[in-house]
Image (tube, rainbow, N blue to C red; front, side, top):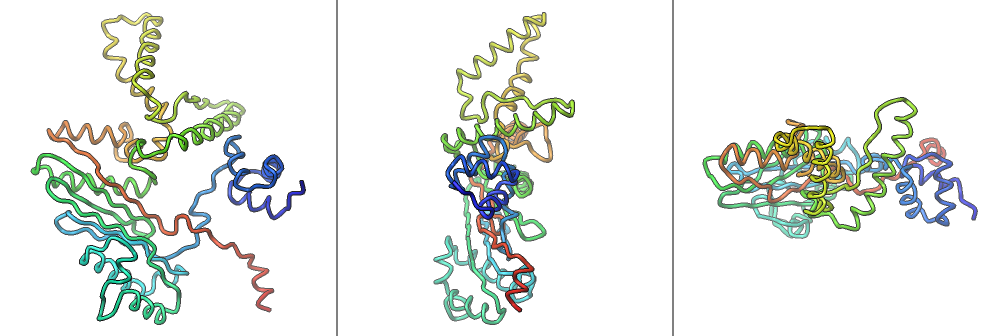
Length: 353
């Protein structure tokens, strides 16, 4: 079938793959662009262009944490341009909206729209602000987390106002609360930078992991072609990609294989128990690459890159004689999922003329 240059261009923008690869993919799938994206991913040819490159929404992410760390709220409020996002009127609107959500314990945009502010509904108030500021403004998302007892919640918004995170944590010993507050703040900063989409591998659908596994292995094999050409060490191609695949049987077999290797190397059996834990950690790290990319608990901590977040929690629990867990994780990135309208500047000028 005939594949238009516009369709090839669109696929290239979505995947960063080469032009001929894009054309071939479209021919293979009969011009279906979604199937073409998947085809390129499975062949390791898609660079999976960052969402941020396709996002046009401006505005701000706002986070407000109660002084007792028992409540935290987060909002995404979009404007059309970055210029308006820095406008004093817009900044004031964001602050007032955030305070309203926290003080009225609002859980959704729908609830916010019917809340009372300055003697009118928030919806009417927002329309008035839009008229004053002169640009469309939308409250897109609201998160409101409240905890009690031996739980705290903390939050962080990056200095550019484009990324915000809320993390709630539980513990047993009340005397540790301040340390848990500080840890939660640091974990929020980690999540803002490292972009985990989920808290744990347990939240990821098995079918999704299976599809990502195919794409990941293809990606690594493609990179190995270039590394081999450059004479550099190759990526190890994993057998597994997530903790969800590492059943007790898989781990037991891995340990048996490692013992066989130690025996073949002539290592005394008396010292195996000192070597095996580190080797098993390495096996798990090599076979949980999807978790490391996509889950908070599976990522290596930016402040201690020898440990995953899960290991940091375990280590700190032992150190403090406590049981520390993350109970809730929410991350907002400004405009994520909103497609950008790409405008050719020359064509826009000609249209104006």
